[in-house]
Amino acid sequence: MQKRSRQSRTGDESTSRVVGRSIDEIKLPPGTIIGAVVRGNDVMIANNNLRIEQGDHVIMFLTDKKFISDVERLFQPSPFFL
Image 1 (cartoon, one colour):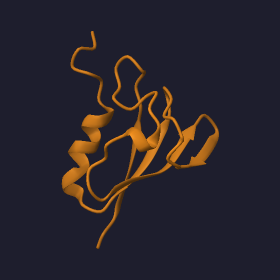
Image 2 (cartoon, helix red, strand yellow):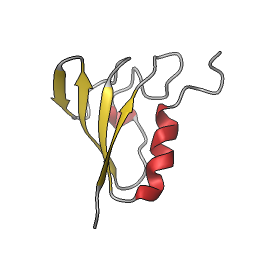
Image 3 (cartoon, helix red, strand yellow):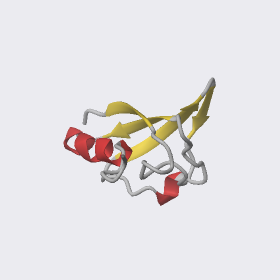
């Protein structure tokens, strides 16, 4: 089984489905986990209580590349963002 990692940069609370939410509140596709969050110069190992903040870099691992587009959609700005 080949695993792929992916890094996504978050938006802000008004445009993102993940900013302001804790990791356990984010519905991830099957076989996807958040491994770490990079905030400024700090790297934090992911845990369920860690909240995603504006500007964070989120390191994720996927067991199936077919879910990459689903993960990317989570981090895209809301369609209502102007």
